[in-house]
Image 1: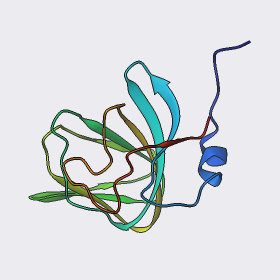
Image 2: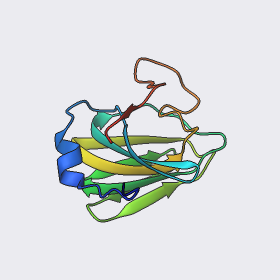
Image 3: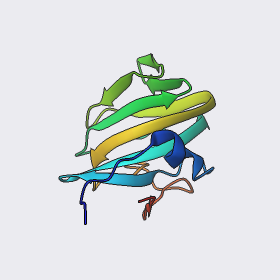
Length: 123
């Protein structure tokens, strides 16, 4: 049995259509590697204890902050530090790889209809 698994991002993204619903594709120590499809605007929120890494695989991410907006293109990433209020958005569908602690709730300090408390695993 080989404990090493390779993940093909295109194939993994093809396995789901839901937007704003992260899927776990791997674990790195106390972190999870998640895939998510985004379109439209999310919800303004922050994470008290967790930093988040957003790596754009396909599409264009608009990471909105209260005082600025960062455009993230394919092959680029942005790290949102803990405590910083942000609102991810995408005009068209955007595919994003997230690297964040296992404790990270997708809506941070906000609980609403977009909160996903139990994440689906694709492995």
